[in-house]
Amino acid sequence: MYSTSSSKTTTTILNAWIACLLLLPILSMGQFTNCSALLPHNTTTIMSLYPNDIKIMMAMGDSITTGFGVQNAINESRGIAFSMGGDAGSITLSNFIKFFSPSVLGYSVGNYPAEVCYGTNCPALRSHNEDGNNAAKSGAMVFDMVSRQINYLTRQINQNPFMNVQEDWKVLTIMIGANDLCASCTFDLPFLEADEYENNLMGTLERIRTSLPRTFVNLVPGFNISQAYDLSLRNPSCANVSRPLYISCDCLFKAGAGRIRELIDSRMSLFNQRAVKVATYYQRKAYDNFAVVVQPFATNTHISDLPSRFLSPLDCFHPSKAGHEAMAIALCNSMLTPAATKKTTLSMTDKPICPTQNTLLYTY
Image 1 (cartoon, one colour):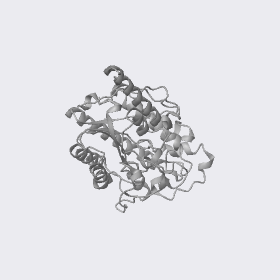
Image 2 (image 1 turned 180 degrees about the vertical axis):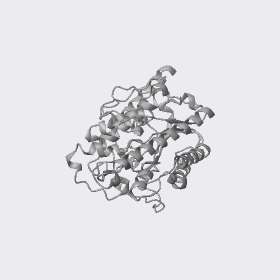
Image 3 (image 1 turned 135 degrees about the horizontal axis):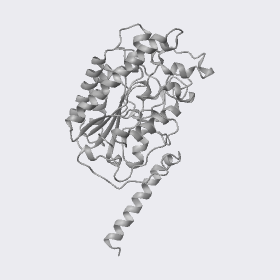
Image 4 (image 1 turned 45 degrees about the vertical axis):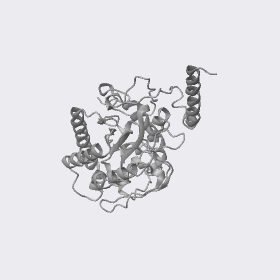
């Protein structure tokens, strides 16, 4: 007869062995091999939230979050997108969380033809099971979060019998705003005002807070996207790239568009400032089941200083697979770092931080 303690030890070893089998595809990438599994944890407050508490992944955004152009085709490689990709072996936030919480749900897998929004002409979000809780839409603008993407997320989670809306801890990553700027310069439309950006962001977050409690929100600021032009100049293969879709921001690449590039970067800076303002508002509220955190790795990043492999060869504008991997590692590391020491620049050579039993998902 085994003793009770011996039986518990055997069960723990068996569970760890099963978890290792599940993680082999991720471990083969060599990114998480130095990390140790974490002991089970079950928090009742977001102030003591650990990576292994997370049960549901979610995202809202545009073509970056859909993985547009990653595989050099007009496709969406959602399975390797930086925040939500769940393809085996992909370096993504979802796979990082999956390492420590193997039962996590909601991530995206696979690669599909792109479905593109054009302002109000936006096809309904598809219901592919492979998309999971990735509500992003290529071409989406800020108002799409309130008018479409939030509805998709709440429906996905409420209709999934394996997801508990009230009890499961969730991570939501939001990155959006570039298409509002690209559409303005491509079609000579008025630029989205910072007030409207802020109002749409606040409206989205309030609906998340009230309908999807226990959510940790990552706000990822936008890059100074005009610098994709400067980076593309160093890559001869970008010279003859065709940019037929405004989601590739073709106006940035026109001769003599220096003033437009300056305007777009200044507008993105205003959007990013408003994101900080919104996050500060929620930090002062100090809800015990909802937090909004700016993960600032894009804030001071100069795309023009990055290696040319950061950009997709499809349009020399969207991030490549290597670019998504760098963004994923930056996002993971930022979540595990207090606000005072978060990095505000992106590096293509950073490695993931390994959390310990005492490493929080920092809300401050």
